Image (cartoon, rainbow, N blue to C red; front, side):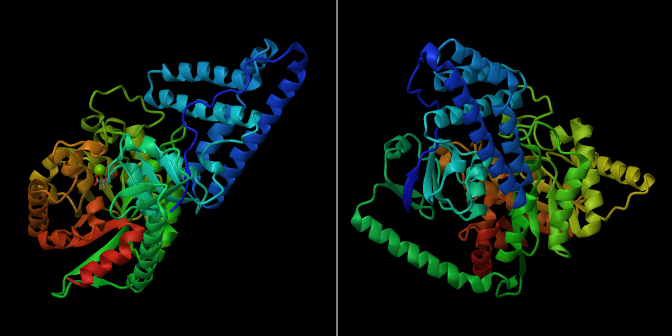
Length: 526
Ligand code: PEP
Ligand code: MG
């Protein structure tokens, strides 16, 4: 529960449109000063993120600093000021022109940069009007964030401890905002649709992320009720603490490994504190997104090594790049697709772009020297893809050996997240050291229900007979082949799903780290 924070979405309104001839010089100076303030705030946030190990998020802010200082943009604004436009109006107008140029670009990544331009020019305009920047990074009071949608970069900008909850109009429980919120331990209510508009003027918002509802301006009784629930939750959390570092087995002796899903290397430390016995899914795409170039092999090697070192003997499953779908990638020409979730994503893109795939595999092989790394391929639909991916891994290994570079052993596994992979599980098992079921995508592809569409909630659960049948088939194939099978989709951390998954034969559960103690408790009580 806390004050509502609505990030400045859309354009701020300039307070003045025109200035007089006599004001030009002072306004030019004020404009210069506003850029300085905004860039210094942005750099400071970037530095803080870098210091806390969030390299990729820090990159976003460096990019925004460059944009704020862009000479072309600056001179366009100055010219407008000389023509007697107020600086706050001038920077918005010039920003809009600049953004429109980006928006027209064929490259989807570049087109998406239009929003960055608007974001930056909006901040300069707000600064000129004395409001200070109005983005997430300015949040100084712990608040409930209300927004149409939240991207990983939005959430990364919120200073630590300042988000008490998220309420978004779009999204579902397996969309990226939910995954981020879960791994940050922040209650979220997503997919509220147009209802959000009614809450935008609220002073206070109460969020129940467990039940999935939020109340704008709660009355005294509701406040008291939320305080009671919140105290009970804190107590429950404290009681769960004792489960953090235990090993979980069912009463009939089935040992279930409980691991963490990581969205970036910086989450590794926390995950261990929550009791992760390994990493069941290291999503590497966050290294590639939200920046305007590709991470080098060495940069990737550093990130993978950092996690490998932190986890030591504990296994860390690195998933190769899974962009496409709803995630963009700079530096790769991703043509517009009518159905991106059915498009060029995951292993399909990797196999078509060895210049992207190989450096990643080389980095993983090199980093494997520092710990226990395994590699996993996303979006596999048939055994041919798996064999092709393994061939590139093999080639990368040979190259490194020829170069005399030290490398480690990595087992290779497959994500079972297309119905095709589940149906072909017996074939895939012959070529895999392990399976990991990605229920988020398996559900969306099996039930033909977009995982981010808030209207399809009924069809967004792994608890559907068709999905369960595919999970069963996968587990049977794995058991017959003698390979382990885990679940790394959001279902793995849902207490009501865990008994069913174990019953079907799953032996590893991987989830947003804060869910680990509760999952271990559920297993121990089975
Ligand atoms: C999944 O699809 O279940 C999964 C874990 O992968 P992602 O959520 O990254 O698509
Ligand atoms: Mg997936």
